[in-house]
Amino acid sequence: MKYASQSEAKPYFIFAIILFLGQIVFGLILGTQYIIGDFLFPEIPFNVARMVHTNLLIVWLLFGFMGATYFLLPEETQCELHSPLLARILFWVFAAAGTLTIIGYLAVPYATLADITGNKYFPTMGREFLEQPTITKIGLALVFIGFLFNVIMTVLKGRKTVVNMVLTTGLIGLAVFWMFAFYNPASLVMDKYFWWWVVHLWVEGVWELILGAILAFILIRTTGVDREVVEKWLYLIIAMALISGILGTGHHFFFIGAPEYWLWIGSIFSAIEPLPFFMLMVFAFSMLKQRRRDHPNKAAVTWAVGCTIMAFLGAGVWGFMHTLAPINYYTHGSQLTAAHGHLAFYGAYVMIVLAIISYAWPILHGRQANSLQAQRLEIASCWTMSISMLLITLLLTAAGVVQIWLQRIPDNADALGFMATQDAITTIYWLRLGAGIGFGVGVFMYLASFVVAARTSEPTEPLVAEAALS
Image (tube, rainbow, N blue to C red; front, side, top):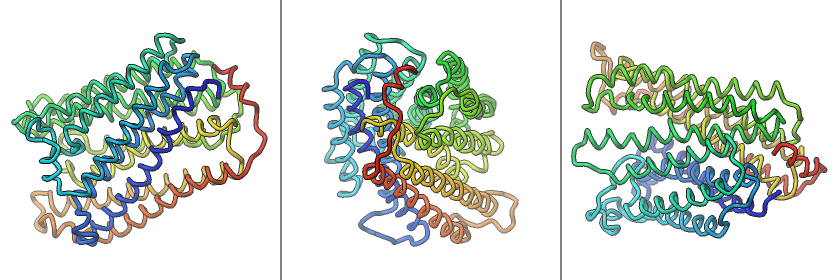
């Protein structure tokens, strides 16, 4: 570790993994409730479990992004963070806000939570993924602003690189688009229209810039490829991501009452959206082919390259599969949507956060890489999680196809209602739960690899070798 302030990433990484474990636990609870409807009822109703599952996903990824930023920014700018103290304060504010919100979801009915947090004075609650109380949203906004201030001040006083400029642009977009979480108009059409300005423009817009910057940083450090080569690729990828991602928002406007021209805009630019993910995959393999260094941290390289493959499949292939308007007419909100969402989030964002933790954690403890024994276990965890997630995706795709055929095809003489259709795909839900348990096993293998690393030590290249890549 070259810069003392890089240690500020540690608590963010630790808390991210704790929340990741919580997300998996509630995912398994949801998977069981799909089959056994009264499982853990009334203690944890389905709607509460789903809120906790999705909110934990968003929050732990944000902790991962913040930790990644605090780790790579000193390396890229070649100076210490502007304020390590501010980084620590914001961690505790964010952790407290997130923890209290999850406790609130579990401790009281959602309507009671809205009452006791004063939602009637400034109503923002009750919307999917934005269920947080208004006071929590305000706290998150302050955290994002403080975090952004720390990042920008660090960049201004240090070296400017394409990696930290792309990262900073993505973080600015993250903070700006979060502000639409406070806009809650009376019109349902207007509400859904701007709701997507948070949800879509985060995950299919500015988060892709953060993904690209973190991936570029890891590949520069692990392959030794010239920075100029990586930067050219990064410019091209983010240009395609922004062009397709911003107007691709239109594929959410098809059937909410927005003007008809969104059918064309959404379909055309949604068809382009897989391209930046394909380019990301080509970029990673190209860097490996051109590498001038065989980095000892094979696990981090595996996560980074695997991220591009799974992101292309989940966000690219499965996204394109159902975002053209004539197809989306039948598939919208079906289990096919869930299939795309699971694989896209895992491939694009979960894997890149696990990759940067895999790369950074040994360095934060004075070594370039974990022991070979620990890395073998970590790589096995990557394969276990990835195969399990592919199985979850394929099973949800099968469930979606059956659901669409039985419930949504208007000229199908055997069309069923919603609940009868759910009964018809129960077997698939059982198999999906099994795959989810397999994914949980992969997560524990990932954690176990760091325990093994702490107990085993092997000589690696000295950390000063990293200086040549800066």
